[in-house]
Length: 240
Image (tube, rainbow, N blue to C red; front, side, top):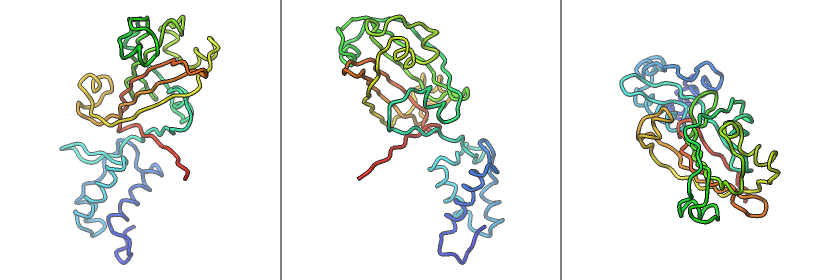
């Protein structure tokens, strides 16, 4: 698999070979890779070359390292396109995952000045505060907190929240969700986020803030989420 006469760098050849094994399913998520020394001996290349290939694959999300244990095939990341406005449930179903939620907190609270500003309502007005762990095939993907005006969206219950908010808003209340503004930034997991997402404190996460609007411009939802960066990625297509 390694051609030393090729102009293609040896580390890149090894990197592509391992990628191919992963994509064919010959190496599966959680599988341990042989030690760098074994690769070096098998292909008669330096351990530095093997290490460079491994590092590239870790950076690209194909592998992950566990200190003192070795290098393993990473779980595949869920890719979400940034074109179009969809719910988490719709995203997961479209990608062949079984969506799920674990409700942590559900109550009506008085809106703080920040929440009131985001939802264009009076300060201290009633809002639903909904905190959930979002799951894909039972695996925690995101910690999500929604704020929704209780005067605009009436009748929310825990049962509805555990299904699909967007379906309830559009099909039951006949309100048309039209567009959203979303901000994404990188961060590291707090202890609370780490506990909910089954990751280590300080692990990389993506913080996402979304403001969702009805067709007439009325804010319907303000959401703050922490997504696992090791399991989730975003994709956007750009045309010049």
